[in-house]
Length: 414
Ligand code: NAD
Image 1 (tube, rainbow, N blue to C red):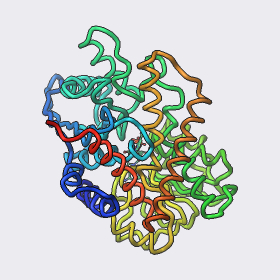
Image 2: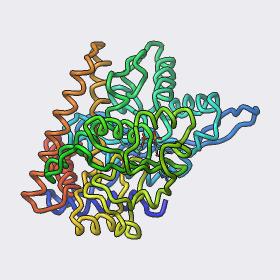
Image 3: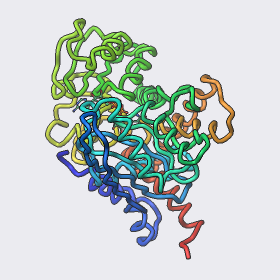
């Protein structure tokens, strides 16, 4: 990774904390993670050899409740990246009003280079290693890049085997059959769609025919694309790690997803032209949705961005330098800690349903999600206008204020 995500998260914090009435010593406490676990563990591979993998689980803050955050499998995972993602989770949960602190986990690996059996061995062993921190009351993981329902099922099963009974509430993003929630698989993308519709309203742009460009076509990008397409928008370009496809007349997002699911990539889709990721980010469009990974838009390529709205489906896709350039250009940036909070919100619904063993209908879930996303969007814009700050800083201010208030009320132990 070109830029250190943790340094970026801390710079964002420094910028926002100036607008919060907060004692310096409490700010110093919120600026760093509460606890960090590093695990090196062996995994038996298909050829009978044993490989040692390194993983992390970081808890940033627990003032508002148990920690919540995804688990990432990617070759570039690092402790600093996990720290940054954990910190962003704290502000994200607070911004949308969930009773959680922030956490994140990750394993340095390339999941595409491992067999299913190797992935299962790795996941079960990693789950066992982090079980000293994980529990329905203490820390509840979820999917992130490179992990999904299957890995969450293995984690739930591993934890349950150790306990001797089923504990569905220990992890969210599970398959429906074992306590997952309706609406969870689309929730992050749905939140991206909902906040984008709100931003379009603020910009007085009708959604019909709006040109949308999506970088990253995974668990976030694909539902974000087909859900906003269903509202009348036109998806003109989509990319994944292998490259992009472009059709100015509009792609059919669901058809493209069916193609990508069988082929493993969007590239080669015949109803569109090939396009590089670099060119995709510079396309003229109303909405750009970076839904892949951090630091995709930097000081170098930000001047080429021609979108009017950027909806941050990914965590940390813009560097602070890119932020400045794009704000100066009048681009409306829906900050990650709001834009992609739909996932953790429906994860919260899943956890609540598991704890109560009482499950809700999909319409109820989607409507509750919509209310939370719209309310949080409006609260952030109010702070942004009142304090004359950009929406990202406003979102951070709101999150920091809520966590700081919890710390103040609870007091410092002992
Ligand atoms: P995923 O693994 O399902 O999909 C990631 C997508 O990005 C894939 O299509 C991959 O090919 C693509 N990609 C990877 N590198 C790329 C590159 N250099 N250029 C273009 N595309 C690239 O992961 P995901 O769960 O969709 O997560 C994507 C982002 O969203 C991450 O930043 C993650 O932290 C964030 N996020 C995910 C969730 C969730 O519920 N899954 C919730 C909140 C935030």
